[in-house]
Image 1 (spheres, rainbow, N blue to C red):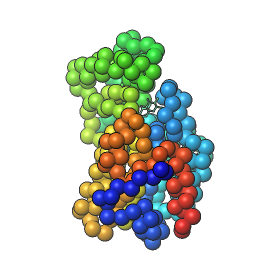
Image 2: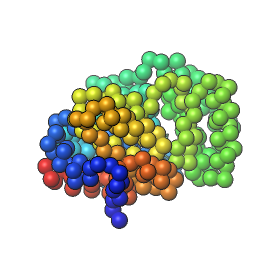
Image 3: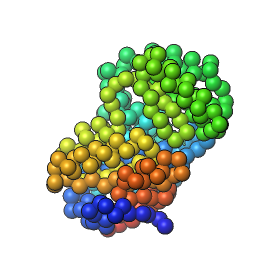
Length: 268
Ligand SMILES: O=P(O)(O)OC[C@H]1O[C@H](O[C@H]2O[C@H](CO)[C@@H](O)[C@H](O)[C@H]2O)[C@H](O)[C@@H](O)[C@@H]1O
């Protein structure tokens, strides 16, 4: 089955596309990166968008008001993966960073954590070696145990102890635990701020942090009956059930996301 609709949402994908076509200039599309636009890879540095994605996103951006990628990756990583995109906005590190007129703009409250994160990265690299992967992201450090799931508890315990000692936040994900600055910022806040002038918004996600974005669409719908939000999950056997349960529709893969958008745009 290519897609599974959530029966509780008052509108189907067909309704959502029809509404999108009617309000195209006031519609925003948001996409998570890993697991949504790119297949999951064993090493975090190896992930790339599926071949169809860059052209699909540019095509979408010519038809609707705004297209944005909202990722836990840094903006520079996203720029590197999408060198040809000119009409798509990038929000990185859960919104701690955004690309504005070609420059990476960082939330001021997070800047105090650049040096502590360098030290944390060094400590993590002293504590762990392959197959645990340490990913340094300037304002956060992620510890990956995809290649050694049997070490999940040990890695998570290290992360939690370190977070408590240094006053950092913990973010869980797909075979990963991340240490982040104690700054009030998540993907939901990006959505809330960005959809203020939108009539319709879609969010495509696969991970726990994306549920905040789904919740932001729901909150906006509750506050504004004229607003319509569509939450799309991308299936996986790690966080899939929880994310799918919170979504209106589930697609099977990043390739299916690209096809879903192309097919939807053919209706315009
Ligand atoms: O918000 P996202 O763009 O989805 O980022 C979430 C995490 O994605 C990356 O990790 C995940 O993908 C890796 C590559 O496929 C995979 O190896 C890893 O197991 C996944 O957890 C990224 O490396 C993390 O920093 C992000 O938090």
